[in-house]
Amino acid sequence: MNDKKIIYLGLIIFAVIFTFPFWYNQLKASPAPEPILSQTAKDAKTCVEPKEFMKTGHMQLLNTWRDKVVREGMRQYKSTNGKDYNISLSSGEESCMGCHGSKADFCDKCHNYASVTPYCWDCHIEPKENK
Picture 1 (cartoon, rainbow, N blue to C red):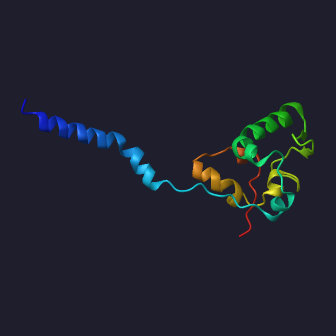
Picture 2 (cartoon, rainbow, N blue to C red):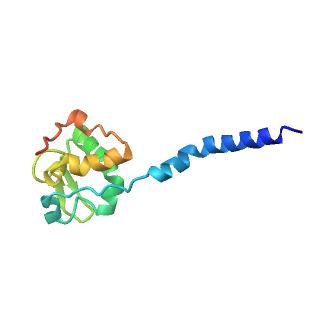
Picture 3 (cartoon, rainbow, N blue to C red):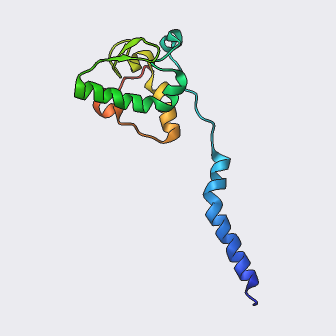
């Protein structure tokens, strides 16, 4: 059994290689971005649903809205606070982009951080950013 040193060295190398992605990402993780609200959004003080729901469930809400508009022709959404909203991503002042004016400051910050590529702009016209 003169191979103990080689076996231990192999186990250490295996453990380092196997755990490398975990500890490497711990050192490089950056804090979550904070989306920048437009003045319109700040003045509104509320979105179509509470902030916590919108943070975690906006994609399900947008999918539901898409299905309602495309399949049923419904253009009104009654929020949990009882207010009616137009279902629109990009048209009008009461649309998503009408309130959150900058896609780069609001949408892209979190989507880039989470490495997700939503397909909203495959169908909608991407808003032009003011530079």
